[in-house]
Image 1 (cartoon, rainbow, N blue to C red):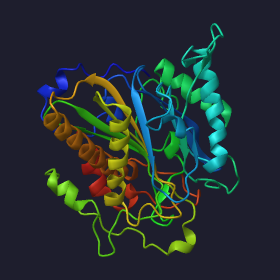
Image 2 (tube, rainbow, N blue to C red):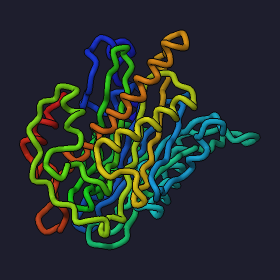
Image 3 (tube, rainbow, N blue to C red):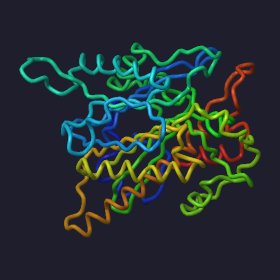
Length: 369
């Protein structure tokens, strides 16, 4: 959906800090759609994020095993058009085939770069990244398909959200998070999303498919993110009893992929810096991170509805604040992805969810506004 979100002035009137709420949809103009399958036989899918026309985009890849598509075209110094959609998908490199369905749906809707010399022809630019979730379900290889890519794109364009019915939902066991796991495959994860409002009124938000090799819990109990939660004054029950990590021999099936978005006006270099800085959010939330088994990739979107302050010093300080908020939002979104993972049916043979392991924490966390 191309979501109207909140008006430009309302965010400044609300107090600054973290907002679970509608996650990345707290950034006005962002669209989102999902497709995929949540069944005993198949756990995979994709999510399509639509930047408002005229947005600037960027990307930063840090993991040792990325599966990506058209990331070079949004690097600073290359094509200045931007992107018509960003895709987060399951299926590893095989799942990138789903992007063709997204491209087809966008072209049919007239969304894309005007083809020079060809009337009524547009070329959608759709960067994408994939997590490794092959075989999750009954063990068969069934990555997201072009048909599912088309469904997710149409859902984003029409506003029905895809798998979720009439309401656009930015978190849970849906889309790219359907087959996600973490902690050496010991804990089910999903799709998560969180926003941060700055004192200036700027909103920064993250959407993540959290599928890391690393664990969210420390060896002695608690979360790696506990210091960040305390820094925001979030007094939540302790997390205990997370499954023990068996070791790296079981872990070559990973990758955390995300989109961070803001309503600030950033150029291509600045939005790329925001994406790069957001990787700190992965490193804080899971350990280890950015390993050879992970293809960690973060895309950035700046919709441009809020200008940076005038003057070099003021604008630079705001850019630093935006980048720091992107890291915080991504950290919280990773935790949200674990808290929002839906329980599966008995007999599916899947790892437990955070909700099953630490229900008091999840109830308190998901109650955050």
